[in-house]
Amino acid sequence: MAAEAPSGRPTPARVRPGRPADRAYLVREAALAFGPFGSDYGARLERILERVEARSWIALSRGRRVGFAVLVPRRAAGFRPAVAAELVAIAVRPGWRRRGIGSLLLRTAAEGAREAGWGELRLWTALSNRPARRLFRAAGFAATVGGRARYPSGEPALEMVRAVRRSSR
Ligand SMILES: CC(C)(COP(=O)(O)OP(=O)(O)OC[C@H]1O[C@@H](n2cnc3c(N)ncnc32)[C@H](O)[C@@H]1OP(=O)(O)O)[C@@H](O)C(=O)NCCC(=O)NCCS
Image (cartoon, rainbow, N blue to C red; front, top):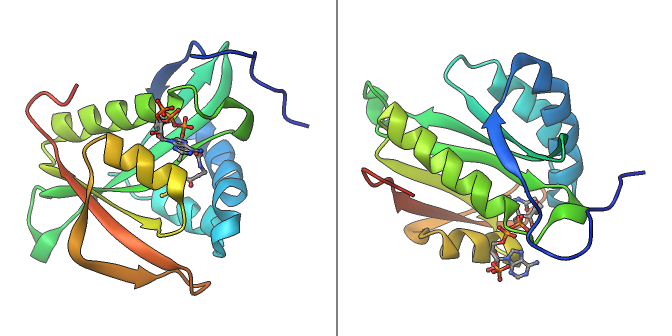
């Protein structure tokens, strides 16, 4: 059973880059976090992490892994370097949510995108995922024009985008 976070907020947390040894953790946690949205996201993330350009970050609280984010470059018409990055996954373990860890992961991923020269961050989220939509809106994301689709489960999805400024902190 997952341990609970200490009560009260914020929870002290730091973020470090993902390592090869984090892969099994990422795949397992993605399957848990995104299972409710109806696709085998663990297996999908496993394939994504095999891409050399995929970048991940791990949130740690008192030495425990409590969240993660994964970015991949997105190539418009094969442009090199890629002009945008896609946030393919972000999640915080249930007992640690609402303590600023998702925001910290998002800020760190945006900084990683800036360093890699990716000019914008894009993502898809479930229309019904209010916590995620609020997190992204608070971090400066806006819905794209025409960015509507459906997950394999049939769940409506929304595309969001934000520019990566020279200094995104
Ligand atoms: C979405 C998620 C990553 C947010 O992580 P988090 O650590 O709880 O986020 P934060 O504590 O940094 O919250 C930042 C802001 O997002 C919004 N938010 C986060 N959770 C919320 C909730 N349950 N209800 C309403 N707003 C919420 C709030 O505006 C919050 O700011 P506030 O706490 O000052 O009001 C987390 O809920 C999660 O892991 N969900 C499951 C996986 C998922 O859906 N990922 C996104 C897929 S696209």
